[in-house]
Image 1 (tube, rainbow, N blue to C red):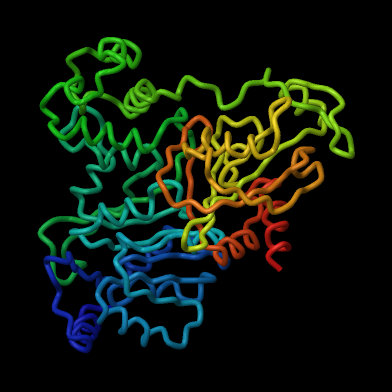
Image 2 (cartoon, rainbow, N blue to C red):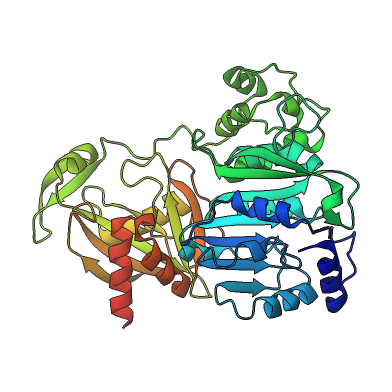
Length: 446
């Protein structure tokens, strides 16, 4: 789209570029085409573009990918895009705030890539919405004012280093790939823009509590000139924490590396030292009729493929959404897979319902002693579900939860239709036990 074409489009929509909304429209067709190419668009891709404006980037991607989702805050521009791409079935336009756009339906899209000439005023909030884990986005190419990109890529002991730096670097490997001058935009901004490539981290950090990490970095940088110790919890004592993470007792927030902030978070996490599971736990071993024939440790049960007992629990809220759990990378079975809200093995001598209530407490922090549980059905042991006799329960709950990072990487409420599509497109994202339990629930629901 050339500058004259851009001005015609803006006149037609009645849009006067807003400084408040950070509207600076790209009009260099060669630059626009080059930016889109950096995503390496493939025929099976779903690309989400935030802030498409008049479609300067989008028009170079139409026909190259399976689906193009455009998220435009300005309703007038969204209507313009809807008309512009009316004959393109692969294009889907949403008149929504990119900082609040619901990502959950995107899990069913397979490979999702993010593209955006992001508005300067809301770029950080949009990045947080789309790139904060867990996210269906695998790769992103983002253009923002150079100052914001510099903050994302900053190193310790610099003025730019802060909360945005740590949030992004904890989950993404990012690199600048091109500087774009003001002359490529209308109206012309006062500073350069930078195009940045983001890929999910190739090397995972030590397992840590993301919620606690975010709380502590915000506290640490709230008054960045003060020593970190003044912003941290009272226990454990700061001298012990400083020694463990390898910093001085007088260190300030900007002096700590990402890895030190992660280790600091683990120090203040009461559950970080607990194992995700113990190999010496004792389970009942059962025969083909689910009758107890003996006992064995967890390690023996898994190593020898012995039949044993387990529960799965589906937690449903008032909207009929199901809570999905992503298993911690520390789990010995199917780490990182999505699965039931809570699940676990019966200890020796334990009954199914008692186990279900215990797992709700241990994994989700739900006080489940008096929570109504409905037994949906049972599944026989198989190689796919780890040779477990599984009993599935369903409960309704919308209250507070507290997960443990050593057991649960993340949780996500998911609509049942969205979940069906996700399972159909990417069944490999889920544990075998969950897939079987979902089929059982579908069958029982008729």
